[in-house]
Figure 1 (tube, rainbow, N blue to C red):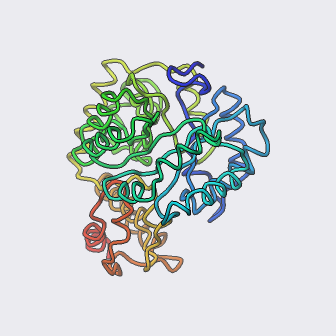
Figure 2: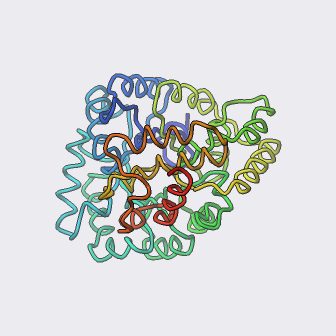
Figure 3: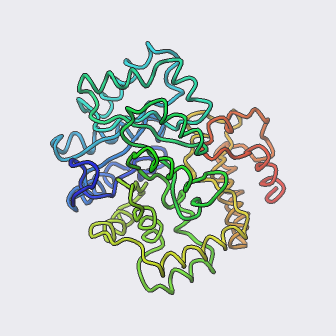
Length: 375
């Protein structure tokens, strides 16, 4: 399972640890261990985390379920420097050392400047975060240095021109976002090509949106008589020449087993499959759905003061638009507004959620639509 860009990576499929199996508010260790075992036994070795994932639980779960159970030579680990967790250059090293401790490792194989956009990049520059991370590489505390990115192509072009030392770029990339004017997946990918940077793909199934398809779109893929909806989404992303790695944020063992089934002996997309996903994209565009990926930054890294479960509300709104099921309102009332969570109409318009949204959604305006639809 040779990787074209990095000899130490096995294959082109990685375990994204942002959506781990949960028991209420805690990571389900038994299920996570089974998933990690299946992943490693299949020959893969690349795990991806960040401190903001699952309110810090992702790093700790990796330490307990992977680092404690496998020799360090059996797995690769990527972590990230995220903007809310430092305010000066002096804050970076102590935070980084805590990340090593939480993950129970002595070094990270890849370390990324996290969720870079035109706004937080200024803070990273002021705090000399790139220079500090590169010192970590010189000290052997990280093996490879890169960034993850959520903005327009022109911003990535600027960053890569200013930092030629960057070895790899993580971008949001899937067939729905490929020509999307907000995400600009294609244009961002082409900037990586321009600077000859290998690419890590995040959100290949767009937070599950490309698994649970509207009926008409689902039929198009079923008529191919091939794999699961997830298989088409992940293989689409993996079929581009600069893709070093495609991450999948799996939440149970069955998802892991499905992903392994088509990535262990990876086959690139063919023309018939490309035509099929183009038709699926046309259906998505006609529905005018909220392009939320349920990353949950809006409720985890920067908690809503009213406790509004924003991603769940957008999921209910999209389900209402795509499927017109009678139970979407029931879901909204019983799951989202229960447990002391605020209603959409209780939004105080503070804008904290919009500042951390990688998709740059107009969340306050969209919550008004949620309230109008369900309340």
